[in-house]
Image 1 (cartoon, helix red, strand yellow):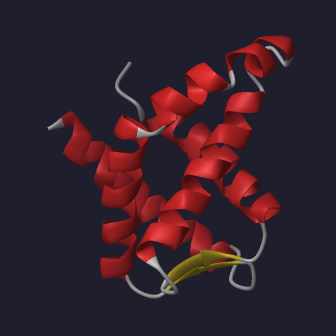
Image 2 (cartoon, one colour):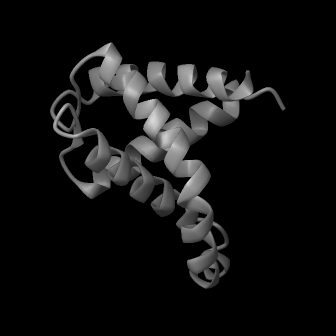
Length: 111
């Protein structure tokens, strides 16, 4: 149930952030946002641990701030998998969206 809640939160965040950054972040529909949230959850489960291990030295040097860049990379991979109905204008925009989503997920989490 926790995974479904996270997917729902990410879906709503995708729609809200896309509405706020209309020129830089595009989500075609609510259905696209659901698909993107599911793809992001799968990529976070399968690919992100590998990327985190590979980038561990730079993550230690930057005191964990590089993980924001990793989240941006995960969003770019999600954009690549989902297709033209979900995309960012630049990698910088993906990092900004990753930062906003991270902050919102920390606030909305059940810890």
